[in-house]
Image 1 (spheres, rainbow, N blue to C red):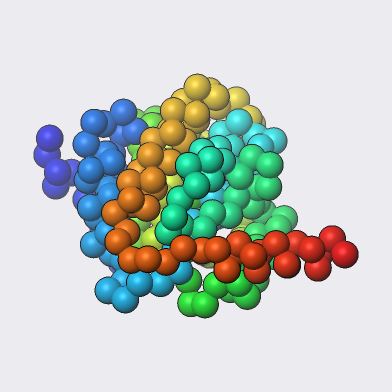
Image 2: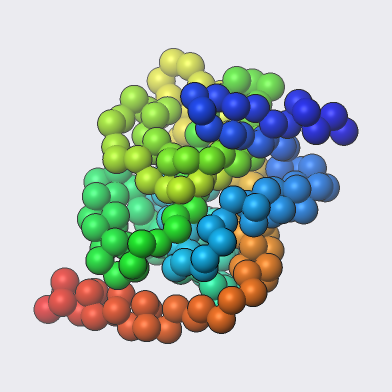
Amino acid sequence: MNLKKQFTIENGQENMRLMYTDSLITDLMSKKIISWLPAVPKEYVVVCIGTDRSTGDSLGPLTGSLLTNHKPRHLTIYGTIHDPVHATNLDTFIKRIHNVHRNPYIIAVDACLGKSASVGNIILGSGALKPGAALNKTLPQIGDIHLTGVVNISGFMEFSILQNTRLSVVIDMAKQLANLLITIDNKLQHSFIPTSILASSMQLDDQKNG
């Protein structure tokens, strides 16, 4: 493998891209993510963006659900199939995250469209994610680093393309992303356990539903 081809710098952001079927993806990307994490442990938050109403755009929520089922010790997850983070509630979730977590380190996860040769790539990037770019939506940026999966080709009628994306590919990519983040969780050695954060989240939900 020519690793030089897997690393690029675009708009000042360092990117790494590998096919989701690559046997080295978890090892290489987990090492890169760990190298980017702050020296002083923070509250680590994973925000999985997307909706269960679109096959291609369900990559984030599927990843969030798979990751939540694993019950990570060091990562707090937002965005699942049952409670998705999407265009209409992203602002609300961002406010909630910053109310609940003190100066969190955020890993954003989302689906994207790209060139035909890029379909199936998982892209790890430094800096914030720009959700909704594939559909020409202007949404708030989020994340200290981000993971995106190229689920289909970009072009005319992107919304229709997302709707007609193969579910099997999206599921397999979500499994790979979840496995990568589980590996990160296992590598985090500090003793942070988000019990108090989960309690705070429940209080916020109770206030919202009250």
